[in-house]
Length: 41
Figure 1 (cartoon, rainbow, N blue to C red):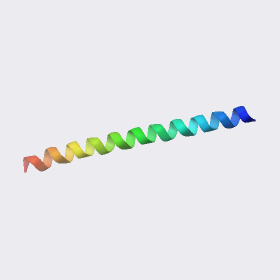
Figure 2: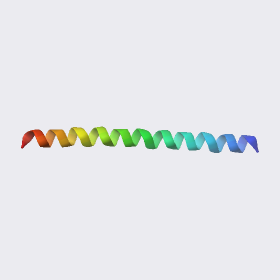
Figure 3: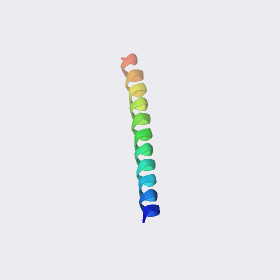
Figure 4: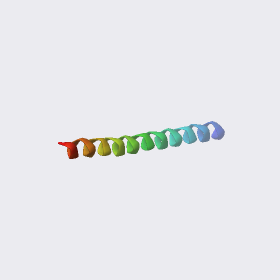
């Protein structure tokens, strides 16, 4: 039972980490995209 809980916790942590990485990458991409186009105008 504890092994099952440990696996669930590991998967949850990994999922949260992946979401965080995607979120920060999206923010960085959007900022660079926004600044590039705002500089052109």
